[in-house]
Image (cartoon, rainbow, N blue to C red; front, top):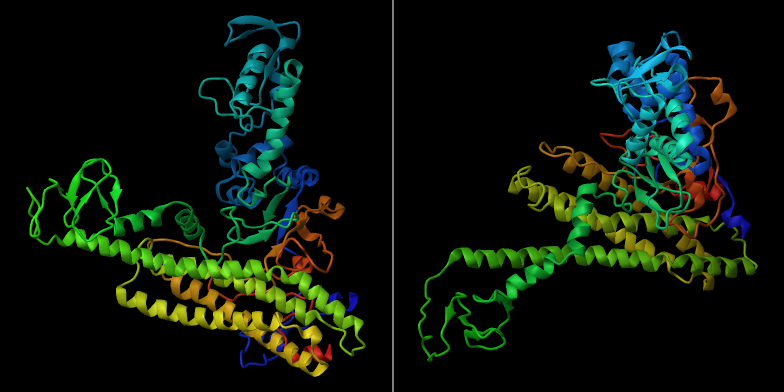
Length: 592
């Protein structure tokens, strides 16, 4: 089975016209050099090396010691470029002052001798010079007071930026001094202090976050370009880097948070209760009418009128209820019930379609083993067909398109509802944009269903001619679904979310080759000699073939992370060793 999983030479589909009349907008673009993955996996072993690399860059540019460089980077959230920008814009002195860095040039000359005594202003006792410590800021206190101060701050969780004890002194204490003093009394607390400093590279860095896997895999992910992206950890978990929930584009993070909450809680059950029940005027429990008489009784014994909800007596005639009369129309109450019913039906419309495509995705995920068996059966036959990459590529295209289609329904629910964008569009504008989006959504849905139908065909039982026909259909429909996905994302970014004035919603870009698989970060020797060389310049290539834990082949780790041209993100091209690109005419694949 090595033939159909083998690495094929990639063609640049932008130089050719697609077979179904879909022309690539970047047809004039040139070949671009290979670009490695923009996301990196930071393991426990590489965490220290990644931190040291950023520290080294700042130390060499500013001629600082390591603890001063770490203080700077923690203050500026490990953004080396921001540190260098502030250095150019505001100068060295202001850069250090804002971060609490005090470079003590005369620290050694200010230290008292071992024969002299020094008064500690905290405990008001005199100590010999070898029992006191002076920080870079020049303040000197006894070792006991310093140690107690450090222990308290570490236990309070402030170990990453422990300030000097002196009044109104904002200088950050030397981590080497902290480590030496604390380790003499509490070695375990000193280890905790070192761990906090090491993990600050992840906790305080907006471009590095822990993988949200459960149980935790111990990895962190670092992205280089955009924090609004979706990544795949080496543990095969795919997630949104911004909100750490499951990958949910084209939904924004806020939309997905509201949608999951809406599906999880009982808000729609409450809507049903509002539509079909009336509250008891005595115990306020919901009561459902099970007969034709408008005089109903609650289990608490209270009788009330179903028409108006008012409490009444139990005696009644054919025409009236004793002690009660209600004939006036109350518009507000009727409008409230109608609105709740309309909202419930609208939610059910989008939720049913979202769940249907999600269930289809789960069912289609089981096709991996079925496809394996079909290909094995074909290889056992004496057939001229040896390349079956069109099946695997079509299957993964189906996965990606189905996932994008399922999440487009929660997006539409909030985009064209009143909950988030009520004041952003007029009623006429909302209707026009909704029709535009739904037309693209329906085209994508129809082609996804076609692709699913052909992928599930028992082609291993067919003759070669019919297999070739199915092959052509799978390749062509795969190109169409990919193009439609790109167009839908482009519509969302440019026509729907782009014109918003009062709110900002960012979505992860569409990636034609699937969610990028992060590769393990390596710090090469060459990076140690060049200040401007980034550690992520070393490309890592993944093994090829099936990835049983994710919805894409492992070779997608070297794929291009930008698959959709848009107003916000430029399209980038890449080529390398991977499975055949689906964005190819059938003739090109035949030649290959």
